[in-house]
Image (cartoon, rainbow, N blue to C red; front, side):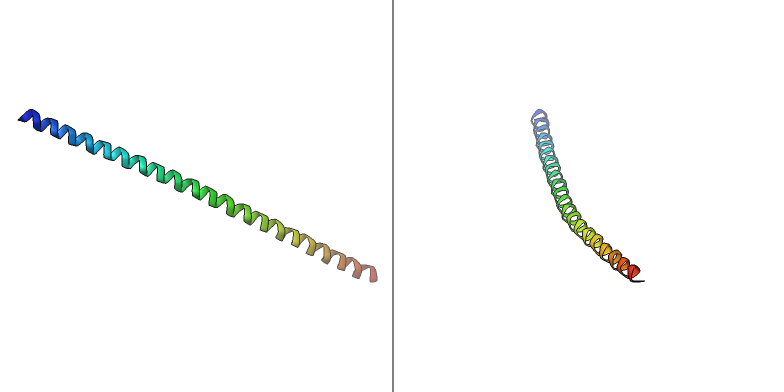
Length: 78
C-alpha cells in the first residue's frame, strides 16, 4: 500500500513538472513574439518618421535657400 501511494505521488509530481515546463515554454514563446512585434513596430515607425524628417529637413533647406536669395536680392539693391 505504501509503495502504491509513493508511485502515485511520484506520478503526480511528474505531471506537475511537465505542466510547468509546458507553461514555461508558452511564456517564452509569447515573450519572443512580443519582442519581435515590438521590434517590427519600432523599425516601421522609425523608418516612417525618418522619411518624414528627411522631407521636413528638405523643406527647411529649400526655405533657407529662399531666404538667403531674398537677402542677396535686397543686398544687391542697396
